[in-house]
Length: 213
Ligand code: DX5
Ligand code: ZN
Image 1 (cartoon, rainbow, N blue to C red):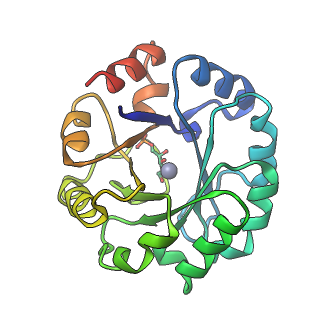
Image 2 (tube, rainbow, N blue to C red):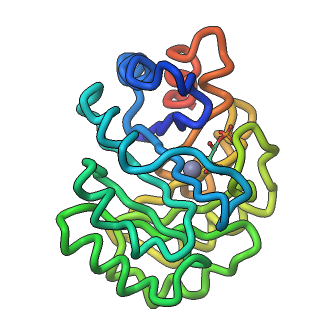
């Protein structure tokens, strides 16, 4: 069954604890936390202190998406803060395999993220070091952007390449009720949803609908 990971990027930053509690109660499977450093992406959000703070408000896995340069510098901080998944961008580090293995050595699930214009050829060298692949279907940095349609072909390619391996395929950016079916059909296991969940008057209903597609 498809898992839904609402992105707290679209939540009220002044009430984050309650926002996390709320989406947990609405049926979120993971809590997607977008960490941005203002260098890898043109926006800044929050760091490990926020992860530690929201951990008290949910028992659901915290899915920490690091949009930061040289993410290996901060892995220990996010492990200590309570991250359950740490995903790092292929484009952000010279040694992705080393960083992924390091995350796993700390008992945390590791994921590799590919930007829309990045080829996923390297996946064949990383499959034994990951629990998740995150396909960006927008250029990272902001919520509420339009889904890039070429992502569908990329999801299919990743699905074909990982075969029956125990690796989740997560899709992030512009996911909504209109395109979710095609994304799931292409092979996605986890849908990140920011704007489509938080801008709805009934987030619980949107999460239910996404799950039942
Ligand atoms: C984009 C972030 C996404 C974003 C998704 O840089 O990685 O997680 O919050 O938001 P929506 O669903 O609004 O595109
Ligand atoms: Zn994200």
